Image 1 (cartoon, helix red, strand yellow):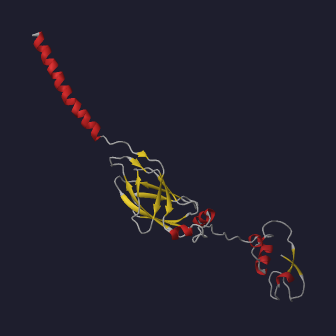
Image 2 (cartoon, one colour):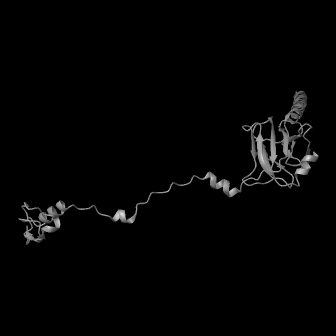
Amino acid sequence: MKTASKNILTALLLTGSATAIPALSQTAATTKPHIQANAPRSVVIVETETPPVIRTGLLQSTLILLPAEEKVATVFGGDTSSWVFDGGHVASRFISIKPKVANSTTDVHIVSDHGNEYTLQLREVSADADPHYDSKVFISPGDQAAKEKLVTLPVFVPPPSWTRRSARRPRPKPKRRQSVSRRRQKPRATKASTLANCISTTRGTGRRPRRLDCSRFGAMRSSPICGASSRRRQSCTN
């Protein structure tokens, strides 16, 4: 009995190992390798030929460099929702390209300040058998006319960075300041109101009434307060 049970256990172990080894090998074959960055490379662009293909990695940045004599004037990206095109905040020859969606493709047109136009095809390669992507690509023109433009003056001159930053900031509206003389200016008192104030301040106070100069207020002949009979300068009491 013991010998028979040992034989059965040995057979089960052999069978399990035989089925486990192919499963492990199949899992290893289906596991996708992690994407890796390639060494920098150079690309020559000719207008009459098919644009070169740039291999990019998912959520990885690929740096595109124009010739040293040129700077980026503008960038026209194809799929701007699935790809990120960043030319920086200052005028330079660098462009960063990053895909946000796996297995996506698009194109990009780069216009330099010397008037040269470079077109590239972009492809995300995370699902490919070869997981390597381009980390840095140097671009150089292949046409003679484009090469001659490198030694001439720039056609497009981008504005300075401080000008673009100041243009984005909204200018504060000037505050309307009131002059000091107007703020401190008191309302003018009329003759009638001044006379009434002089009379009301002495009533019911028990103080000796002041002598008022009725001629200041232009008291008329029938003034009941001053009892003046003419417009002459007179004195009266309240």
